Every structure is written in structure tokens, then in C-alpha cells.
Amino acid sequence: MIDAATVQANLARVHERLAAAGGDVGAITVVAVTKAFDAPVAAAALAAGIGDLGENYAQQLLAKVAAFADAPPAMAPRWHMIGSLQRNKVPALAPHVDCWQTVDRLSLGTAIARRAPGATVLVQVNATDEPHKGGCPPEQASELVGALTDAGLQVRGLMAVGKAGDDDGTARAFTTVAHLADRLDLPVRSMGMSGDLELAVRAGTTMVRVGRDLFGARPDARPGSGGVGD
Ligand SMILES: *Cc1c(COP(=O)(O)O)cnc(C)c1O
Image 1 (cartoon, helix red, strand yellow):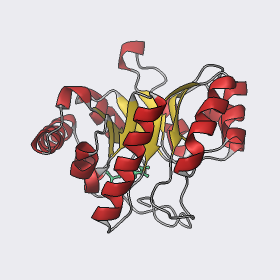
Image 2 (image 1 turned 60 degrees about the horizontal axis):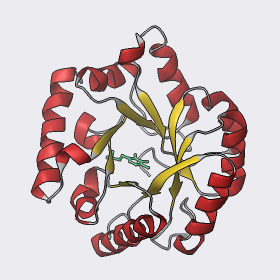
Image 3 (image 1 turned 90 degrees about the vertical axis):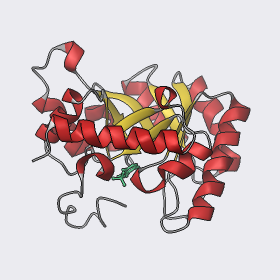
């Protein structure tokens, strides 16, 4: 059973790793990734003092929103959508998502702007040269940020996912994205998960998305999803 005390202890360990890598723990937001877990795990994260929760799948996010429907506003989590997203999911999500982290094309941004004018978004950048993954190419990020801003969205930063099994490639990608954020004057850099926290800190992350290191191994992947951890 994952209870608040367990999450708190695991969070302390995550903070230690961030600090050991040279990070300013007070300046790095930890988003707890609750995908594949049930609502009680999300409640344990909240009770442990983590107010930012991340989900990859619309259905799982909406199920947890429903579970917290009766919570007082002060106890309501901030929901981050961190999975690749189809436009047709936007209407159902729009009332509940506080930060859309995976905006990588204008058509998706336009759909969000229509349902949630002024919403906070991050532009996902694919800096690892893996075409099957989400994210816009680094050289298109500037234009996309401009277009999303023109569409009325609050573009707060950039988001990136590292390259599995390739620390050098991940470090290079995170550095590319951090420089891009500098150049575009964007404060938020959402980079780093359980396996690459240190690389993200060294590149100047301001937001890490952590699942396994807070909650342990995820329950079975959803059938046909290609693995929840991907
Ligand atoms: C699953 C996931 C995470 C969390 O990964 P862990 O290895 O469990 O920390 C972070 N970001 C994204 C985009 C994810 O899909």
C-alpha cells in the first residue's frame, strides 16, 4: 500500500538527488506522475504535500478528477497533461487541466485555446531525433511558441523527454531545450523523470515529472498502449 508517509519519504529522497546534482530544490517543481495508479495513490501524493499531479491518458486523468470532486478547493491538485494528446480529447479535459505540457503543433493549441482560452501550456520539443516520439523539432519551437501566443495561450515553457538508455543523448537534448528556453525567454523547463533527474538538473530543469521513484513500479501497462512507461 502506498500511503502518504511512503510518498513523503520517497519525495525526500528525490529532493536529495536533486540537491546532490546541484539543483536548488526550492526552485524545482516536482510533478507526481500518477498514471496507471488509482485515485488513492494520487490522494497519498496530495497528503504528502505534492500539489502537482501528471497524467498521460485523458481517461485516467478524468477518473481521478472525479474521485477528487468533493475535495475542498485547497486540497484540489493541479493537473498536468503530460501524454501525447489528440484534439478530440481536448473538450473533456479542458475544464480540468491546469498545464498542458505536450503541445507540439498549432492544431492542438488551437483546439485548447477554443475550449480553454488563456490556458497555460508548455511546448514539447523533440530534441533526441526520435521521429516516432512527440514534440516539435527544436528549429520549429520559436515559430510555434509565437503562434500559440497569438492564439491566446500562455506559453510558460518547454517540455522534453530524454532518450531511453542514452545518457549522452539525453544530456545533449536537455541542454538544447534549456538553451532554447533561454533564447525564447520562457521560465519553465519541464525535463527529467526518475531515470534521468541528475541529467535534467545539470541542464537547468525547473520541473521534474516523477512516477516510479515516488510510487514504485507501475501496475500493468494498459493493453495495446505499448507500455505505460514509454
Ligand atoms: C511516465 C512519464 C514520466 C514519469 O516517469 P518515471 O520513470 O515513472 O518517473 C514522466 N514524463 C512522462 C512524459 C511520462 O510519460
